[in-house]
Length: 85
Image (tube, rainbow, N blue to C red):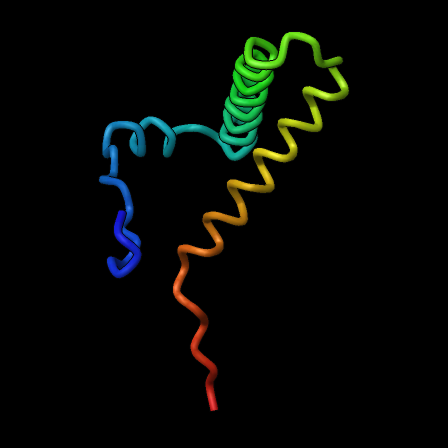
């Protein structure tokens, strides 16, 4: 995405939204936590392949570094907040 273009949302998956809408709030939270665990596991596996000599603690630090970098990159893409007078 070019720097001068505004951020655009991904298209809405209407079927996913219908299925999700039928879940209770607790079931939605469980699903979100399951996806979060899966993503964390996938990140650790990828990093373990890339850095086979690192300890599990060092892999966890690499995961945190990647998350921090991702959050910083996403923050930078947002337009600056307009001050209200």
